[in-house]
Image (cartoon, rainbow, N blue to C red; front, top):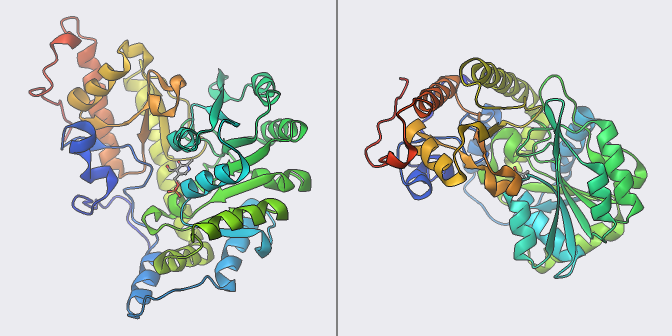
Length: 411
Ligand SMILES: Cc1ncc(COP(=O)(O)O)c(C=O)c1O
């Protein structure tokens, strides 16, 4: 059975972050919500079916992950990413963010320095701050229509003595899929300065046709020994609510330390439906994944064309992976608070605030385009109308009456 991704699923009243928290987040109920990174598109029917079948057996006691579960993941990494991993290298976790937090606690002490390459996923900041470690950030630079790492800056930061690099590959929010030469440079520097790499590869299955994801640990045995990779089926199959994820560490010493931390918090336990979903996903989910990726790629290309043609004041580099568009709105000449108010109350859009991703995010907003094309078209049309209003000579931001602002919607 194929999914019809144009079909609209009303997610209201499902307690989903994306649609049921608009009032709390934007102080407005009826914005088009395009922030948190999950999809408005339905998961693979095979996953849905496997969960229903499992639910029909009404005993939901303690459950372990069997050999077939791990094999499905191992085979997936082999066939999708050419990455040969062994079962012994795998650890279980509930979520990637849980893993990142516990890995930081395991391999560093308060006040230790942890490097991130910014702008980057907001929870990297939260995890480092909440554990009392110091954030050291290296800003990406813009070069030839993409964001790239600044290796001389990274080297100067690593030379300060950095315990861990928390790396995002592919990169949220800028949508980069890192090329081999970039990964090689980065890993050589980490090896040179003895910095452990923690690679968050949660978006690694959502790559568009021009790019190829290379798991950083697959670069060489040396790099694999120095890397801890965190992955989950959450983004790929839109099952983040099922709380299941993997950690891959070839290095036995690193792995055993992580295992000890997880055991100490009793975090190896599993949710039955998460296990069922992950196993089905990795053993049978490829056809669905190819379909959803095609849909997302058309959405991505649609945004790029639409913005270039209709809202040229907004700048956007083509995401190579992820379903996230990193919109540069600096030409609108609004400060970040004004930008947020403008988008919510004039455009009727709930986007993710760029400054959550670091100071480089000033003037940016992240738009999640994993929604029906119809909704995406409506959202972009509202954005166009709002920007047109903003550049009218008599528009005064100070006079914006947010309670009575009429959205020029595009139904
Ligand atoms: C880079 C990255 N890592 C991790 C997560 C969240 O992962 P999890 O739900 O498994 O904690 C997200 C969600 O947006 C993400 O973008």
